[in-house]
Image 1 (cartoon, rainbow, N blue to C red):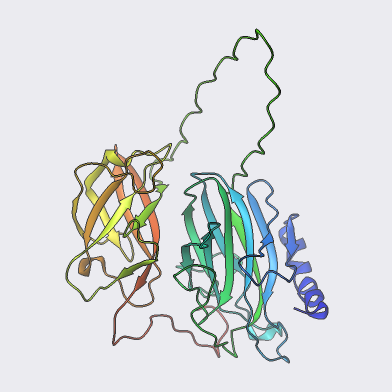
Image 2: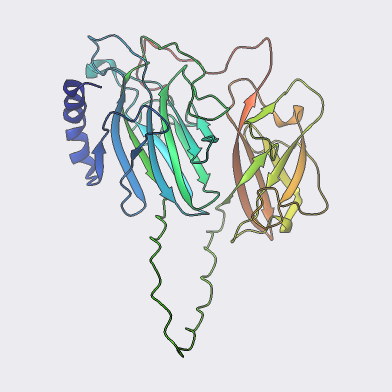
Length: 351
């Protein structure tokens, strides 16, 4: 983005930032178009917000290829929401509308794709269309750094990781434009301090008891980690036209014991309420090698209800009488059907 466009984006969002009183909102700085050089998000009180743009924001300029990357640090067990607002706009606004795609990646050597979303399930505050993408309830698997990618449809992120895209095409109508990215639910890990040298004959400090587990409000499902087709480095392939099952690992954590799951309560599929349960492994398996036993279960592929265009699978169940939910990325492979994503690019109002 050139200097003129960056100032244009800042001016376009200045009024909105004042109206919403978000003191920590910042403007994207270009140079963040590679997953290896993401821009740092400023997290304050668990929330970070940035206004950015994919390509050109002016209707008088052509749409160009662009992608943005940001990073934040979070703590194991955080339930993070990653939300795009203001991408789709009314035609009368005079600014380009952008149909966003967002994804979250691990900071490992392969930049593993963890979650991706194209269309939100509903229209939330700050949006006029479900084309403003949103990742809900991302359960942080381990304390560390995570990367958020922002692109535009049809340029979804490659499920092999690395921040690559599946298409080089840029939609001339909704492929460029400004957006606001908000990340909430983040607990910044404490900075490790260098311990002082030991003092001779000093008795050891009294060990404090562990903190109590987080309280889950009655009726609210606890968010847990899952791994679809565990230990497969790729995003899980799902073949809904094929007979057979798909394995899903329910991951234990410091606050959740997967081995206490009521197995007959499990549902899994495109929406999360599909009665696709088959069975579970009798003994726990340490799938993610964190020295905790995880529960690996199988689900009927056809009954799971996946279709081309679905980007994640949803698992629900109960453990010791409390509800829980987990989400994981999938790639649905089925020939002969069109992708479910459809938009009327001539009407930029509410879907």
